[in-house]
Image 1: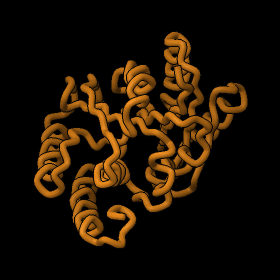
Image 2: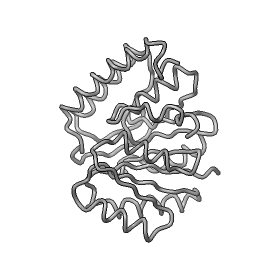
Image 3: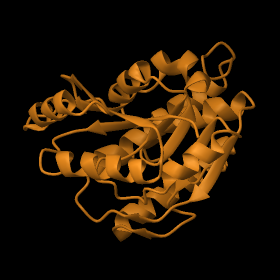
Image 4: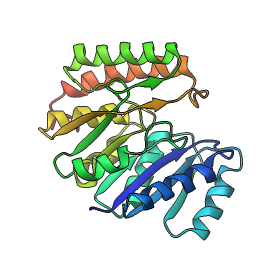
Length: 236
């Protein structure tokens, strides 16, 4: 089985950071998955940085990074740049989606460049507003870009590092980088596999949902323009 690098961005997660990382490590050990966990704090203002740094000092399987600005996309870039393995698995720190996705990634990345864990294809316990907002966004991406991906959240995604490294520096610094990678890989004939996952995410979002909705659609417009610019990094 391939070794994996598990990538997690965090923001103000002092209450759950230690317990979540220890739980994740224990699961990977039980599954016999050789792994490292990379965590990057982006703009945290609580004790996340202190807790993460101490955990990394005492656990060899964990590496912790910190950037001053609130930029989940930049946190993703930092994690990918520092990852040691070809197989990359992105998870949310609250572990709200089933951890068996980690095992699926080890198996299916042998046959694809990206694996999408889709809440839409599985079951989800989230607020009705978040479910409706996600469905509208997914429908729009199908109509405007002919993309059949059914989940663009930042968690439960996996990649071959070599497939995304060439465009890493071009990616959106906020939450749009997952959509960009889906679009880029499709336009370049790379294989994306989707599987259903179960998700229980009923805690308050770390993002301002109104701001996030506006940003996501503005970002889609930018991507539409990039897709039609033959000189852009997405279309090349």
